[in-house]
Amino acid sequence: MTPLNRRHALALGLAAAAGTALPAAAQAPAKTLRIGYQKFNTLNILKGAGQLEAALKPLGWSVTWTEFATGPVLLEALNAGAIDFGHAADTPSVFAQAAGVRAVYLAAEQPYPQGIAILVPQDSPLKTVADLKGRKVAVGRGWNVQYLLVRALEDAGLSFDDIQPAWVNNAADARTAFESGRVDAVGLWDPFLAGAELAGRPRVLRNGEGLSNNRTFYLAATDFVERKGQEGQVLRTIFAELRKTNEWADRHPQQVAEQLAPQLGVPVPVLALATGRRRYTAVPVDAAIVAEQQRIADTFFKLKLIPRAVQVREAVFTRDTYV
Image 1 (spheres, rainbow, N blue to C red):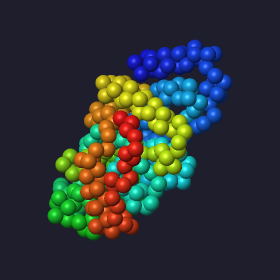
Image 2: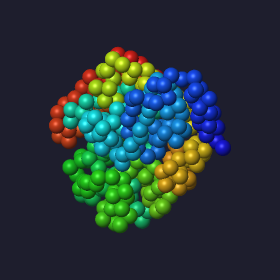
Image 3: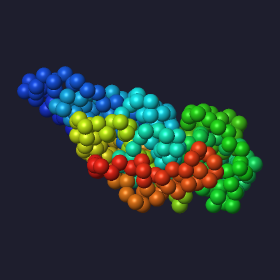
Image 4: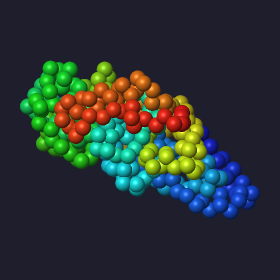
């Protein structure tokens, strides 16, 4: 049993032992926290630990978890009122703000530049990003790897207009297009990137280093954080539990891979590669991180890929601090 699983068992045991002493409202949660998550991330690890449910039970809250294939879809659900809290990468968060999604930034994760990359087949004649001119690249609208692609092209003296984007809706479709030879290159993120790297040994034309920090952000529905009830305490509890699981995950990347593999249906070696190149600690959304996000927003507005200019700082929740 891993340390995290032992803590999970202990937490559940303590909750069970305390159950007889809790008031009726705490034993039968009256409110539900709805969390959206994506494969292979901090919320996925928290879900597997099971500790959040035990921590919220005394407050009279239960938890439901919904998995989403991409950040843009998760943020649409947040805007529609289908979930209260979730996480998404930097670019989807900018696209959501530009689209008027009612969500706020609560915290950010550490930079993860190696977790995104532009790939070409091992035997491809394309050797540099500059060679992508006129070529088909599989990518999704509003993805973190779309921003990487834009920055990489600019760094090579090209623009997004110099390639042929082959738009896809999810990582599985992107990888299928790439492996079938229908496109010349693909943009992927972990764990899909790690899976492609181990399966076909493609070449990395460029990852995020020096171009994109590839941060993940924790966001909540604006209506949720503005309520006057227990929502603030619920959010503090989420981040307190995240701190525990994140600290454990940073120290035990191999065990994270082994724990998540059966949940995700992803092989352990794939998750081990992805986990070994990231850090999980959450940090406040400070001025430097806002500036990072603003550059993404300005880039996509200049390219006319978002409908309006946005000020990222306006979407940062400042009334309370959770990390």
